[in-house]
Image (tube, rainbow, N blue to C red; front, side):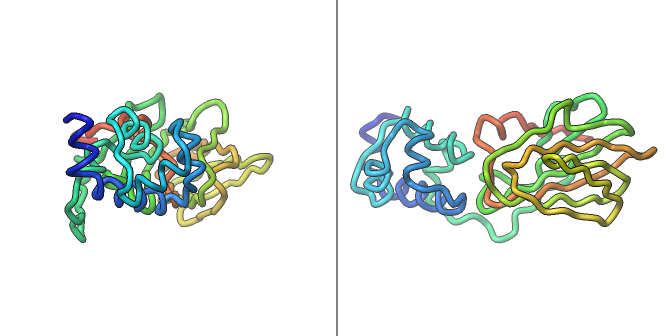
Length: 205
């Protein structure tokens, strides 16, 4: 695909897609411009179909929006019901005592959802982490975990949930004697394409 094709045949489709994904993530034109090395003015023209764009710039835009390049060229409507079978769940390479899988089908649109399994003593890592500035809902399906949230510590059991900004550093540890299972729901999505590319189907998981 060359730059001429991008600038002509697909120009309107691309602009509409960029705007839709950006709006779903509550990302301003300026924020997207800062993340991609472009400007709010250029992106505004792109979204209205008034400006062409080259492939390298599109790749940066797609990465900042957490989608693939092909998602910007798909002019069809997504199916209403997008089934994801358990053995098709994209998963991160397993860490010691911790497994995390994506429940949202790509492209991630209005929210992203993950399921995690922790062996006794397993955790999300030594240090708390943060991502973006979205609303995150954490729900314990089974087991007992400790959630570190900034300076706070919360012990949560099966059926408990807690909501917090994803910008607050957080960490999860299984403090129980059985496998713990949890869900993270984040809206709008915060993952970029490079993050999501690490999740690969692991049949039998």
